[in-house]
Length: 111
Image (cartoon, rainbow, N blue to C red):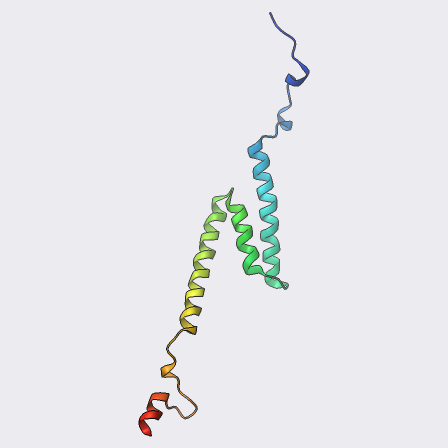
């Protein structure tokens, strides 16, 4: 015996079937792409592009492997730059020469 379908069980056309996974992918793509695009624009225009671009890549990295790969590259480059800057500012200043070309140590020895 065949029962008639209820109102909630009607066949839905395939183009109207929106799954959670598809909606999540679209939302992440839209939001992450927009944040990334704004970050790239901030390179030219004033703004914190150094903060916004990794944020956009992190959002896109939730869904796409290429974005996660680029985020790891950006993090590695940032760490390298921070270590380089830290080494520069914490370097030993004893080898500093003045206008005469003498270091502070050699001036003490000359006196």
